[in-house]
Amino acid sequence: EAKFKDWVSNSDKHKIIRAKGILYFTIDPDYIYLYESAGRQKSLGINGKWYSSQMSKKQLEDLVKNDVSFAHDWDETYQDKLIKLVFIGQNLDEKAIRKELDQI
Image 1 (cartoon, rainbow, N blue to C red):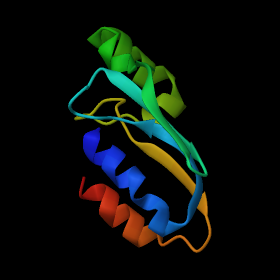
Image 2 (image 1 turned 180 degrees about the vertical axis):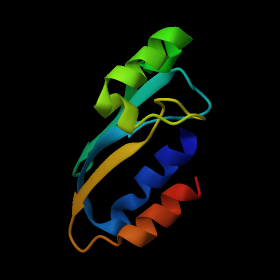
Image 3 (image 1 turned 60 degrees about the vertical axis):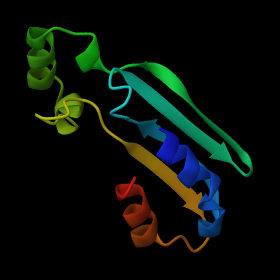
Image 4 (image 1 turned 135 degrees about the vertical axis):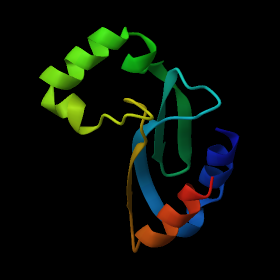
């Protein structure tokens, strides 16, 4: 979480105008974090728990089996814990942004 906050505070170089998404941090594995930014305003906070942190193994198996959209994002190692971020800006360098985020 701290590394992501550091990256966000220095992300102006990418000309990101707006961003939004959910994040998973290994330091706080039960909780979904929501990130939002618009201009200079940025917020990162807890936005509930992952299904895998609340449901039994059987309930999760049933959900994966019966819900195509849930199954699409399911991972055997991380379960439903994932990172989905959308950036809006001008002349964004997707490869550079991915590389930087992959390193934190």
